[in-house]
Structure formats: structure tokens, C-alpha cells
Length: 144
Ligand SMILES: [Zn+2]
Image (tube, rainbow, N blue to C red; front, side):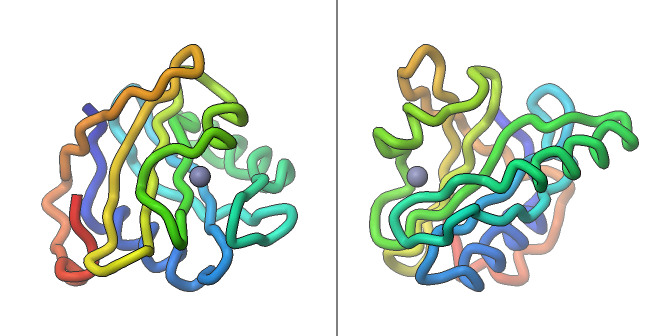
């Protein structure tokens, strides 16, 4: 299970919608299975089909997290035309077995949000627990 506030999910959705038609990506900051905040990152070559996170952004965000006594616990990205499920490219590019992957599908409304871990190239779905009691002001826009 991974804990994240609905405000953070809404921020991820906003970012993903803004990047359309290209895939958006960013990092999840927290500790253990709790996500405290989300940070936008840039894709090296913006594309509707894949993303490669800008390494400078990863470094900057990692340092910011460290300053706050937190760490990078995962990443998020969007699929603009396919399901919220890791693609073979996502599996091959998985940087860390412990990372959570939050996927957003913008294929249809309400946008679908799901979470995974990719351990030894196998995909495990992770339950998302909405924490922090954030208001679902954009509640009709996305669904778990
Ligand atoms: Zn993907």
C-alpha cells in the first residue's frame, strides 16, 4: 500500500493534463510507503509515447528531498492514449525495485490513477490509500 494525499494526486493530474499530448513525469518524495509531496520533472525529449526524465531534475529534487530529511520513493508519469499500466519500456527502464510508480491514464475521463512496484521486472499492483484528508476539489476528474 502507498499513502498519498488527494491534493498530490490532483497536482499530478494537473501536470499530466498540461503536458498533453506528451507524457508528463515527476518524482514522489517521502519516506517508506508515505508520499509527502510530488515534484514535476522534465522529459529529455518530450514525446506522446515515452519519457526519459531529465537527470538534472532528478539530482535537484533528490537534494531538495534530502534537505527535508526525505527521499525519492518513486515516480509518476502519464499515458496519454493507453491504460494506467506499466509498458514494457517502463519495466525495462525501472530505476529502482523499491520505487513506487504512479500511472495516470488520460485516455478517458475520469482519468484513471494506479500504482505499481516493478520488482525483478515483474509488475505488482499497489493499493493507493488517500491520506491527509485533502479535498477532492477535482474529484470528478480522476478515479483510483
Ligand atoms: Zn509508461
